[in-house]
Image 1 (tube, rainbow, N blue to C red):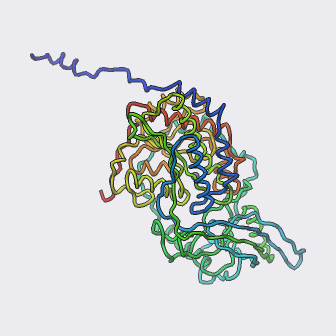
Image 2 (image 1 turned 45 degrees about the horizontal axis):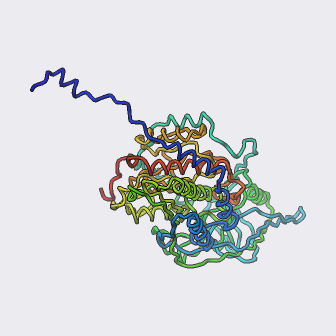
Image 3 (image 1 turned 60 degrees about the horizontal axis):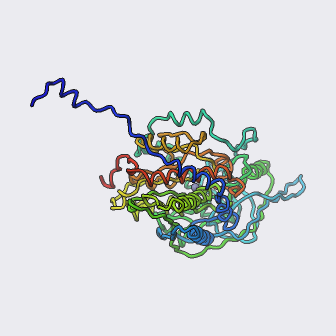
Length: 537
Ligand SMILES: [Zn+2]
């Protein structure tokens, strides 16, 4: 039989069917929300992480103890949990005590002393009780010849005057409609591979600055102070100490202060206002002495570090997995509350809620749900990269393409991360994966929270979902309210329990559990972006 051309065209025309509605589970969502709010425990998890165990610096004993606590807590809910090693890191470190003050004396003023608000940079060696003359070196001053810098025995304030906000704007913010609309309307983000290029002039200035820094680091100063760069928030931001070039390299092929055998000098971040006063005193020709009492301990030269991995096993699709998580390690001067006990407590609470739900339902999730508390995040996503390398696709370094694809790669539906402070979820960064939009839209509609409605095609960076995204596994970070994250708490001594928002934490736990459940139960795994090229292709 031969069809007329017109009839053939009609038959071949695609059926304009209504897209199949993404199924949602209102029973589960109602249970999850009630469990998160009426019987919620997220702030108790956070108390134990922050107030009790305290800062959780990678390599430290405090982190080990806190991880053991987390494993025990998962198990107390009947959720299996293990420490899973991701590799050797370097040495541990902790600050034992620190006090710093400045003593001023000049020909025409009464001698006086005032305390400096400061925090040691991690892996700074002890100074003991010591005093040193203050010298201010503007490290960006291109007229300074590194060969002429005499810093031996002195306390070097490396930097220049910082702008200090007068506090006319609130530090803590929620995203407003305007900002959310801009995110929702954002175009497709630039694809990877856009390399930053520096002009020869910029490179030359960068090298000259590095030479001055090297001269200070190797000139045997008593200590180095830097303005903490938190302008007016009252917080001191301290990360790791810098190390002189030309020393032994460790993990990742670079010398870091945690690398066994690497030597450096004691370094401190100082509150901007206090650093500014020291700079102005020096400019006024006053003689300033810094009195310092600082002790620190290094431990275990080569520690193997672990992630905490917990799991609710799946049923008919148990080989396939959904992972939710956040990093458990922190910087050292606060107690790592918003960065990232928040994401860790929410991940643990999602596990508790989902376990309670599946127990009540009498049937586990279709896919296996894993709960990951990563470590080594602050030093370069070490824990999540190690996990992804071991199970899904090996990558040699941060942001580098995978060298291979392992069989487990195909089995991961999605990874969801929380690591942008304690602010409530306002939506999801789709990470350039347009195909997830109708799915996430259906889940957000079903979750029915008017404050969490934004889907943006934009990418966000800086944290563990990148370890998955980088090897072609759908990895997402929730879009959160910033509160005072970058303005005050991020990596600072103010990153403590009091800056966690309990209502926001409960909402985040409920939404994370909702996304994990729906990902575990849907017919298909989540659609993926194109697989990145393997290394060498
Ligand atoms: Zn973080």
